[in-house]
Length: 339
Image 1 (cartoon, rainbow, N blue to C red):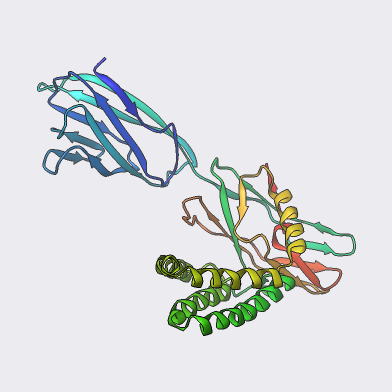
Image 2 (cartoon, rainbow, N blue to C red; image 1 turned 90 degrees about the vertical axis):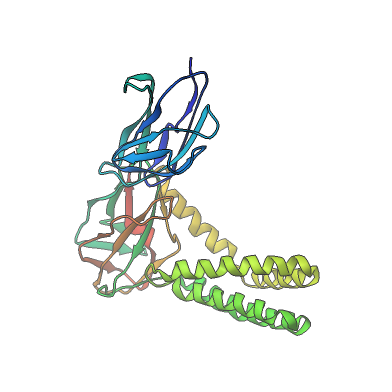
């Protein structure tokens, strides 16, 4: 059989790059034709040169390859209307008369998360005494892909999300103690002052944004941290004593401040709340601070796929929170994820 191998993935997350290659032998052809779905496009092509291939809408024609017997491609995909669908790629070898010599079709299952609201009641009642929440928001991920879900409280919301009190205290003490520990390191290694100061600046910026809405600043901070990490790695490799001093400062600060039991219990409760629902909360530790009086909360749900791409936000109708006493309620406890 002239076509020896044809690789196309069986399934792919919508928006992800789709790799492909075809291998053949002993075949006389005029050109190779690849027909792709409308929401896919050619991103890269291998073993052919510019001028020997063209695109005509959803058709790619390759008239010559550099080494006969192989063609590699990478396709870009977009979001499809349906959260789950099957698409086809057609590969044909065509002769001078336009007749197909060989043809192969491959199907790709394209999927993505699809977070929807099933039910929102106007009132949520919280009882700290009974350890119960009545009137939970019912949501569901109808798609096949895992959804990372960020929950925001816009400016119009009377109650704003925040980190739990113990985590806020830990973070504050951690920053203070780490600054103190790194100051000692700086005394012994003054030539690395800039490296240490940049690390603290990036850490402070990350902590500052932690309680705010999802922001484009996150991307900037992550880029700065990557840049810092690249430069710091070279410094650490060149001076092991500095590396060990820096690592010791981090370890001492963590051991001095970590409240592992409280965080561990909270995380276990969160995991139980999302089990088998194809959902991951962006920050499972965020809470609402409620008072023993009616308060209004406005929530915006931002689904994010595993490529880090945000999907259409869902703004929920205004909800009244009624609690029997002042306290902190984790955001995940307000939501019931349906299977």
